[in-house]
Length: 473
Image 1 (cartoon, rainbow, N blue to C red):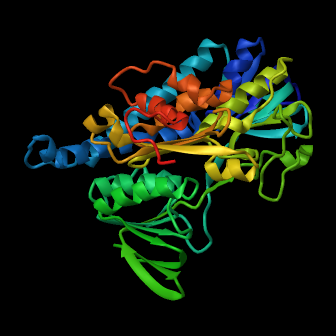
Image 2: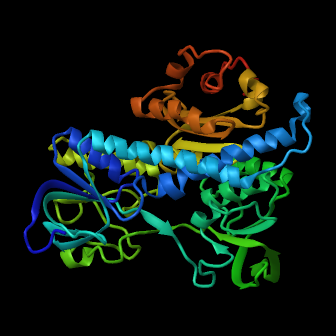
Image 3: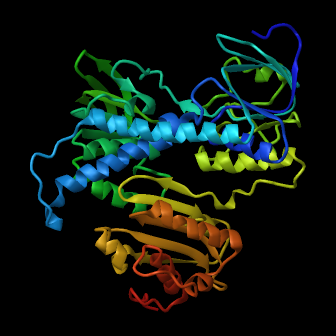
């Protein structure tokens, strides 16, 4: 055990080993910094352990099960199809283990020292790292805080028993017969739809007038259409009030249009957002790091806090709580520490919901562009005009490109359809490069691929589409 006041000198302390922290540590090490990274949980953070990766593994399994059950339309018939959810969870666990062990391998290969335990600031240049076995004290030149976030717990619906956060919902031992979901945002929609494909009767209580309200309504309507095919009940404009549990089920009381109603299910999943991990024993107040009334740390365009050698990234700073935003900020912070002129530029952060169909957006929506006074054109191409989408039974979908009405400069794009999460990358690159719709249209796209949708939408924006009709002038 290391005790006493002697401090070990390092260049950089990274607190938190999620997609922000581990990326920052690796990038800083590549730039010549002596780095130690600490996390009280498993390396990989929420994303790899109880968030993005395990949820997508379960969503993938649900897609395969649905295809097997409804294979008749493809001429595929199978009898006695069933779900061994224990094995589904084993599959999910193997994916998580592969990813988290990969993170540790990369940290080790880049000579980043890893510490499993808590961190507490002693002053703005020193911190105590501790666990059950040791408590070393480090003096650092710079520090990056990347402690992430946790599910918001509502006072009326405390987690425990039959009230689940997303963490518990990902690890149920068997498929529940029924589940209530409070909150129809990204997480609630994804997990609710996933379980519905396995046969769970899902009721979503959403306060807004649509689910996944961060996306255009014509996108979310496609998801609603598919959810209804899976017998998902969606109650919009709902305000959940209270819950009563028994040893077998839970009943939620809610209000909608002034009327009080109840719904009963085996479990209640609460997904109403996430709270930044800036409280607790870290000691930000002790060293004077400024935190606003929402618990977020204010930073400049290099991710510096008000203490210039202490940086903050990811869910604990203003902006979207997205893993890829955290990784982007991680590289900016690490490069700034190394003296490079890196700065954040948030004009092109993609957002993706892994619903069915998938929804993805990057850059401006049509409304956002018009609100900024831009003269724009919105061009919408149907997936039904793409051969690959039709072969994948994905004709229900579309892409919109928002471009300058005069120059064709690409300002944004929205996609609802099969593989939207992958297709959106080309549009992000177009915005970053200052490309026009003509640049995209003149790029030869392989056939038959979903990528051709981007080319076809660009041609539509130019007024001479091949695989759909031009709008009447």
